Length: 114
Length: 114
Image (tube, rainbow over the protein chains, first blue to last red):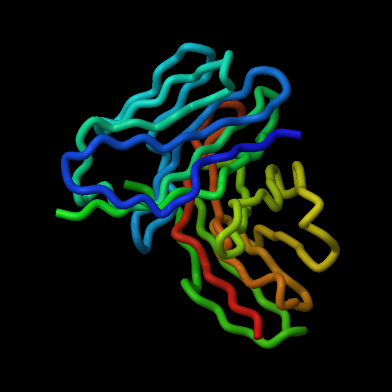
């Protein structure tokens, strides 16, 4: 079945540091890949997505590239801010029709300190 | 900006009691979902709902669970006889349509079963 594995947290970085959160997946076919973010006290928000191999999703300075050969979708940001402190979830959705459910990783908590 | 809302934010109940978790999806959305996250584990799909019936459900969603859209705005998840292992954060989500339409998530209800 489909599954997502992401690096364990928590991750603690100083402001302006480089961020990488690793995510790999197992899926049949060619899924769409997502990163969701959850800020304290809020719901999951879509951060970025990629729907086919070599696509790069980007938003708010975050990027992730769909790598089919390594089945990965690592999240990166060149310079993190305190406001980026949140829990980040990698997820996939198969290309089946219908309201296909998302398959999530465990989430990685990021804390950015000034 | 429209958002998915959930009530209550935190529910404490005794084992064996019935609980109803409530969600108000975004008004023009047609597809509704429940997910849950047991502390420290992955966000897991429970059920999806469209046109007043269940579209898909996971093996977690057994006879103890039911969903309902009792009126034009609410979407509820009922657990008939709660168990200790039902303690989790429950997320509601909605989307406009199928395929690549983004699922918008609520802030979650933390259910604690004692």
